Image 1 (cartoon, rainbow, N blue to C red):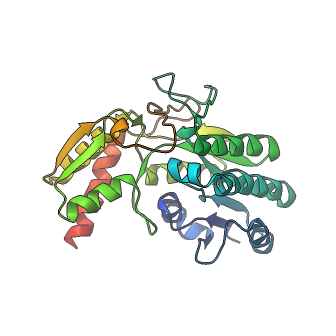
Image 2 (tube, helix red, strand yellow):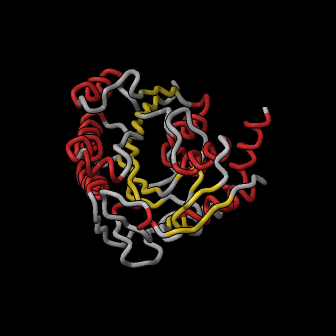
Image 3 (tube, rainbow, N blue to C red):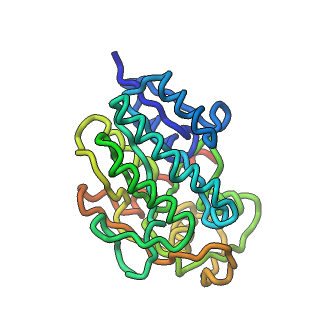
Length: 285
């Protein structure tokens, strides 16, 4: 019998990549907002109890630092209470739990790469609610993988995120973009994250907390500029400070991650080149 994997948020960027990575070897079930109200924790619990999965992969989160500042109750429910519920069910039903955390749990005061051994110090509601989930899962269930990830690029059946939005703007005729050059992270191809998830599900990685990022760091400006250079598209990308874009949430500007516990993944530029090749194919089709 094929292992049953329930992916919550299966049409988002990471969920889409995981579905592709698992393939026919697994019985993959997906749930997104079309069939599941993740704010209704009883509904989520009933789905997990009814499906009896071998693995639950939680890709649901209240994203956007400003959105979390405006809706702290929703952020707490989706980013903290939901993962805690899943940890409780993992203990009851003995399934593996894969959960995604964020570089947002760090303030960026270190101004250098941050490993699993660095102590989180969130500076906004998004980061705080994500860190509270980390703590709940690490202490709440045995069969857990908490993967901290950074800015993602990749294919998705759901809403576009940062890089995809910039690509769409240029495709729509916008030839001048103003991008922050002082927000530094570890850009990562969602397909690379998915390979680590598969290894975890297959038992090749011990339970625990891991950073999962492509090697290297880049500002948002460097990421966008590199993408358009690889695509060969003409666009003026102007570097500016993030303070040019007023936000409700306090920023954590320099939070590149490093993997202390896993073998290094490829450099983000190599991963971006592969992704841009897929973008070119998509628009040429």
